[in-house]
Image (cartoon, rainbow, N blue to C red; front, side):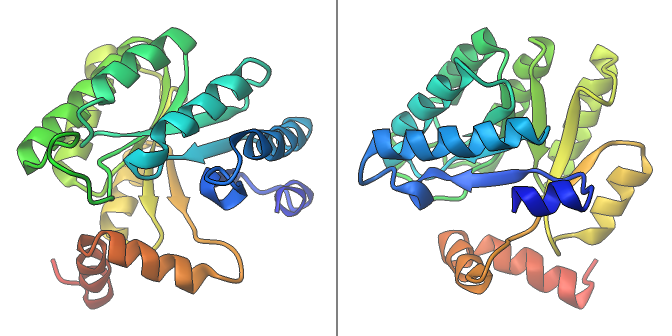
Amino acid sequence: MLEAIHSNGLESNVSIKLTMLGLLIDEEFCFQRMHEIVGDAKKRGNFIRIDIEDSSVADKTFRVYRRLREEFDNVGAAIQAYMRRTQDDVGDFLAMNANLRLCKGIYVEPRRIAWKGHHTINANFALALRRLLEGGCYVGIATHDEHLIWEAERIVREFGLDRTKYEFQMLLGVDEELRDIIHAAGHRLRIYVPFGKHWYAYSMRRLRENPKIAGYAAKAALRIK
């Protein structure tokens, strides 16, 4: 995939879930596979995003990321605003000047470790975004929530940030009108595209993890305003 991106001159990078590479079987094995992939991407001038999964693998995921960052600058991570640990993680990543994807979070987690209220999650998202941007981290602002997009634009204007310091991120086929509005406003925007032979199974799993995505997709398909 990295070779195809390079040879076709595409402005695209790759996001990987570490459980795809054996994280739950052997953390060291997973690290070695990621080391090989990130190293190959580095040679091609590309970037690898380590995606976040449920809380059972968060610590392992961040350990692999930190080890990779000791050698590579072309690798980033992701954090979820609905987790109660998020602000602590932000503090750790600020010290690394990390490249982060900030999203709300989709996995079903117990209340003792995850915020449940919509407004609380949005407030935690906005606080994390403010801290990261103010601290100089590059942030992929991953949301389809129009209020959070408004909040992000407000923070960007307040700090007077150059538009190379952040990007918005959305899923393929979800609220394309809002996507076009963001892009027309001059912001950089990245579309996440499921890739590979098992794209359908992946998409169905995402729908099971968060049925709200099905609602977003249905509204986009039916063009419900």
